[in-house]
Length: 104
Image 1: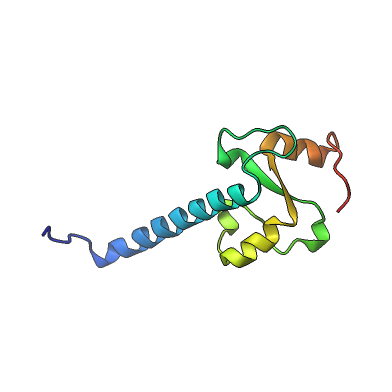
Image 2 (image 1 turned 30 degrees about the vertical axis):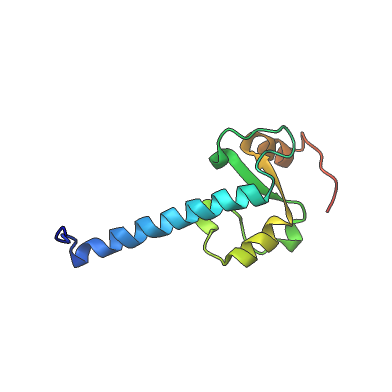
C-alpha cells in the first residue's frame, strides 16, 4: 500500500477540483436531459458550446451554466424544462433578435 503524501494544505485544491468535476458532470447530464444538441441548428460536437436559453425570463430561478451547477439535480431538471438547449452561436442570435422563438 502506497503512503498517502497529501498534506492538510492540499485539501483546498482537492476540494476545488472535486467541485469543478461535479459541475462538469452535472452540465453533461443537463445537456443530455435537454436533448443533447442545439434545438435550432442541431450542433452537438462539444457540450461546452451548448447553452440553456430560458424561454420565459420571468420564470428563471437560476442560470444553467457550469458555474451555477450547485443546485440539486431535481432543481436543475425543473429549470432545464423551462429552457431550450441551443449552441452558443444560436443563443447569441436569439438575443440579437435574428432568430425568433415562440413566446413561452
